[in-house]
Image (cartoon, rainbow, N blue to C red; front, side, top):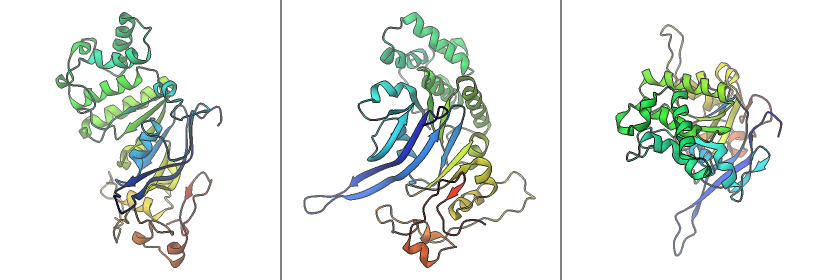
Length: 319
C-alpha cells in the first residue's frame, strides 16, 4: 500500500448459503466475486451497477458489518479482520440512503450526534461532546438551535446533513456513501453533493460512493468501478469511463442516462434477454446472455480484468 492509499481491497469475495433443508444442500450465492480497489484521501471511487450487482454487499464489508468470505481488506496497512474491527470502525463511517429511517425519531439531534462519542470516546466530558456536536452542525450548514430539535422537525435535505454530521463525529478517514441523495428532491441533491465535495477537501476524506445515478457520479467521482453480478466489468478514471466506455454493459448504462442537451445525438441501447440467475452464472462472460457482441468465445471463457488504468473485462472492447 502506498502512502497515498488509505484503504485497499484485494480479491474481495462474499458468499451466502441460501436455502437448503433436511435432504438438500444450500445453494451458494456469490454476491461479490473478487473485487480489487484502492481509496485515497480527497478522492472518490464510485461503484455503479444495477440492483443486485453487489454494491451494498461491498459497502457492508468496507464498513465492517460483514466479514469477507475471501480476500483481504486493509486500512492504513492494518488488516480489517474481526479482531481489529473495534479499533478500526471509528475510521470508516457510512451515510445511508434514507435520511428518514437512519435517525432515531425519539432522540434530539444533539443526542444523536453525541452518541458516537459516548461509545468511542468515554473520557470526553459532556461539555466537550456538546461543543463537538455544535461545531459539526455548523460544518454541515445547520444552525446552533437545531441541536435541541427532533428529526421530524427537519426536511429531507436537513436530515441528510444531520446524518453526514453524525458520520463525521469520530473524524473518520473513509466515508461510505450509499445512495446518499437518491431519496432527495432534485433541488436538494445538488446542495448535498456540493457539501460532500467541500467536506472532502476540508477534512481529507476518502469516499466510496455507491450509486445508480450516473449523472451524480459524473459530478462527484474521480474513478468509477462498474459491477455486474458481483464482478467488476470495467474500471478507470471518470473521464475515461464517460468519454470512451469499453464494456457493452457500461455503454448500455450510459445510454440510459438523460442528456441535458435535447439537440444532442442520443441512441438508447436496449438490452435483450434476461438477467442471469445469480445462482447459475455461466463459466463464460456473465454478460453474454444480454450482449449484442457475444461470440462463442464469450460463452466458453470468462474475460479477465487487466491491471490497466482503464480496464474492461471484455473480449471485444470499444465502441
